[in-house]
Figure (cartoon, helix red, strand yellow):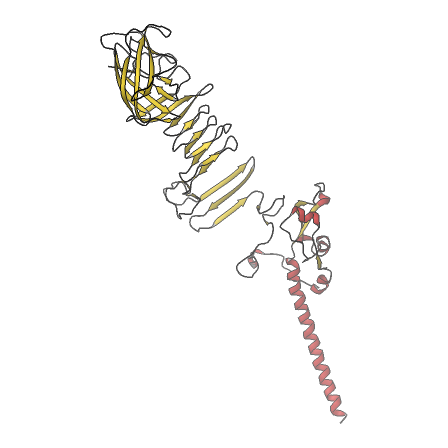
Amino acid sequence: MNTSHRHIAWAVGLALAFGGCAAQAASFTYHGSLDDGGRPASGRYDLRVTPYGSEKAVAPLADAVTLYGVEVKDGRFSTEVDFGSVAVGDGWIGVAVRKAGGGEFAELGGRSEINGSGACWSTTGNAGTAPGVNYLGTSDDQPLIFGARGLYAGQFTPTADSVAFSIGSSSADGKQSMAMGDHSEAHGGYSFAGGHAKTAAGHDRSFIWGGSGRDFSYSGAADQFIIGADGGVGINTNTFREFTTELQINPRPDPFDLRDVEIALITDDKWANIYLTRNTGRLNLNAGGGVHIVTQVEISGNLTVNGEASKSTAGAWQANSDGRIKQDIQPIDSALDTLAKVHPVSFRYTDAYRAAHPEVADQRYYNVIAQQFAEVFPDAVTKSGEYLPGAEKNADNEILQVDTYPAQIVTIAAVQELAQKNAALEATVQKLMARLAKLEAKGK
């Protein structure tokens, strides 16, 4: 018994397919798929099969065979065709179809070729094949369909100059694209869609995966890697620490279990990394150009926060101040005179500066003027790397920054000077009070 498959279409909206191993002699097994309105058909249908000597022949080689009540399940069917004692050899067959139970047959356009010489592929392998001559598939613009257990499994679909592959209920029509999962669609070339995701035409060379909890359609741009997973995304792990985790990254396998988790960001000769130290649980941020938090402008500090920063309790930031790391230690003299040269002011930021920094409120602020402060504490004034809004980027237009901490230390020294002066004054007052008491005693 032989097998025949080919893809053909029914005029009333049903499609029938059979192809692969060509028919031989008078009987063969007819495998096919049947769609109704673009969806896999189910039910029973009548097929009328007629053998011809050529594709355009008018007279048949034998009487037509009507196959009644062929069962179609999920769009797939299989039935035997037997022309009795008539051996059709090389020839063609025409097919007509109708729903079981009567009515007119609808002739399908085109005929299917029968190869009597035998062109089946052996289930144990083939030898002497030539690429482009011997292959499994279709030679026209119809897809190559696969099935398993009588059910539709997937297909190769021709594109303009290549082929796309889809599995299950998914579909792909982009050049060399692939789709798999629950109704995924890959319309971009060289792309992949899986899970429950869709890529649009032009979304080429891209990967998209959508979780089952959403219709993850994306029509962004080419050359992208997109993942939508309601349960979270894991790297180097299959166990999430928390159900609500969106992205979890674990270290690569390490025989000594000492590896840190590191994310490196590199562009040309610029670099930055974020890493978690395993033995301390400390999160480290490091970058060759400094770490900027919520900032839109070029600045020079190793850590820059644009806007306000806060801590859970009051207190200054810690700094190394061990005497063992210091040299050329000098006391602070004339602290009161130094502070007298500092000019504290209140002010408002300019409209242009606030436009460049929307987070800055229009209110009064308290600080010093950098240019004036530099006359007292020159090392405490530096360039910021940011320039006056709308001005040319040159040294004259670079905004200056101040570190007012030196003024705090000098203030401590000034208070100590005042304390010393106050102690001296108190001693003088005590002496004067004693002399006054003696004078008053003599006058009595």
